[in-house]
View 1 (cartoon, rainbow, N blue to C red):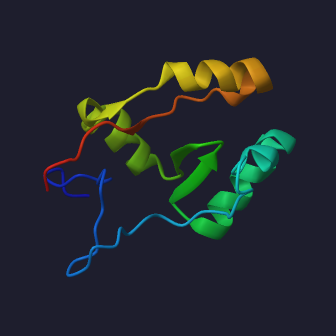
View 2 (spheres, rainbow, N blue to C red):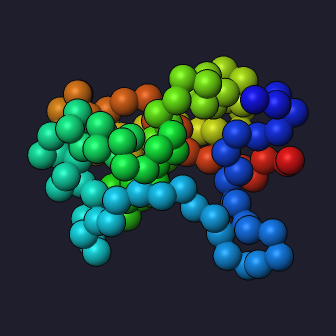
Length: 117
C-alpha cells in the first residue's frame, strides 16, 4: 500500500463521471437496511459479507451507511495510519448497543472528511 494515498476516499467519484464508486454490499430492507440480518447472526452475516463482497463492504444500518474493513492492512491504515481523517460516531453506536447488546458495538469509523489524494 502506498502511504501517500488514502485507502478510503470519503467521496469516491469515478473518473470522467459524476457517479460515486461505492464499495459493494448486500441489499437491505428499504427502511431498516441490513439491521435485521446484522441482528439475526452477527458473525454469520459478517462472514457472508466478507466472502461475497470482499475487503471493503458497504452496509446500511437503518439510515446510516457504514463500511466494514475485512483486511488487516486496511484496518491498520484506518485505525493507525490515517486515523485523523476518520471519526467515531458514539451517538449512533450507543443506540445499536442499547438494542443489540455490547457484542454489536465494534470499533467503527466512518469518513469524517474528504481525503486529499
